[in-house]
Length: 114
Image (cartoon, rainbow, N blue to C red; front, side, top):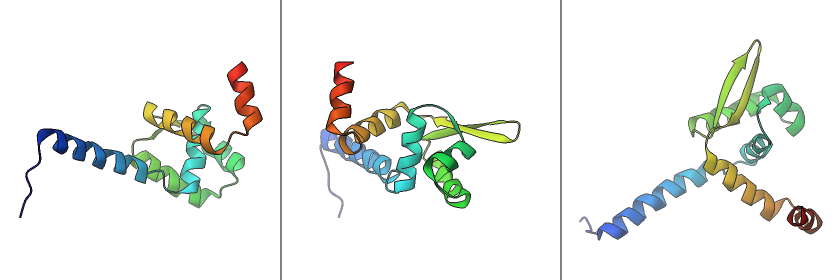
């Protein structure tokens, strides 16, 4: 049995499914850490390894997931690969998560006064 929905509900359902897919891509702590690091700008794989204390195999797996989701893009320069955010929604989302979970009250207060 199929259920007929109004056009508004059908659109809402499509949007909810898109949002759920978007959120699913954030469900690993290492992916969140990588995205947080990339909000600040482009970084090399080596830099991400060092900054986030992630081992290369695990980092590569999470980078592959983020690339597949369309959240990051890479460019190769000589022997190094550099990644950056590819989706502006990701930067907005990560910035808000950072404010909610990572900023101390004093940091947030200083940022507001700047």
